[in-house]
Length: 371
Ligand SMILES: Cc1cc2nc3c(=O)[nH]c(=O)nc-3n(C[C@H](O)[C@H](O)[C@H](O)COP(=O)(O)O)c2cc1C
Image (tube, rainbow, N blue to C red):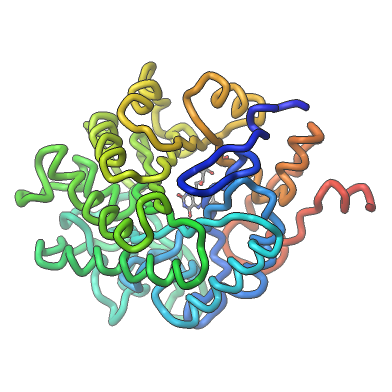
């Protein structure tokens, strides 16, 4: 069989994955309105992809305050929890496994999305320049607009944000998710705390690496308190440079964080590699250093082919590989890898927003051959 290693089983936390092909988290802006509630169509989309070793859901806001784009799903209301329960049920019915990606966007937002038109929140009041968010305009049409100037969070507000993640973890548990993935990547709130360019705080949550990583650890420990650390993963992207994010110490702070993950017993570390979003490639030796610092499972993601994924696992630098755009267009990605079959091409025009087109209508190999 081609890609033997990629297609071999692995355990992550207490979960047994039949293969090491992970569906990467993919925002699709198709939650039902009003209320940003996962729908039957969303359940069908995830169920179509249930042969993945593990599905990580699209980023899911833990609160209204944590939202930065229209029609992304939440996990803070009863209807949302019920919607997710149906999604998880549909994936489990097809013998899949699914983790909820818990998200707070921080400054990558706009007043028009926030409760009562409030300013978005961030570690420091530093606006993300050249950053656009997807909003509903006053005339009812949708479009992109500049991210707003955020308000710096008071230290007394931080426990409240931790609580948003805790409440979301309780809802994820009740919805039946196998795991949660704390989103600390791609320039959103937790990443904003870790990065030198976005965190200019002078209290216990700013300055040194230990201080900048502290808030992420607060969130992880609290979420692990709900689900058990063996059911919690984290996504990081030390080299990400989108949304005007700059970090002079991204690698050093991620290695410090990795040692903390080991202490807490976090099940997996999901490394979103910089290249796809324009960041620099990871430096030589970084992956080995990460392995030494952390003893849980490592998932990597970013422009991998099946061949490269297989090689990355074979050389011991990762335990599993997540695929993003390939999963948008290939619901049966695992079966295609097994058959070494060609892949459908993703249609970028239908990535964000819309209905079934470009979402649930990509054919499987069987369907393509008329079977
Ligand atoms: C349409 C789209 C939506 C994405 N949404 C998310 C998201 O919600 N959370 C996240 O951590 N990364 C998100 N990403 C990044 C992907 O998870 C992945 O890291 C990236 O696509 C690179 O992998 P690939 O080359 O296999 O596509 C998104 C990427 C795309 C293309």
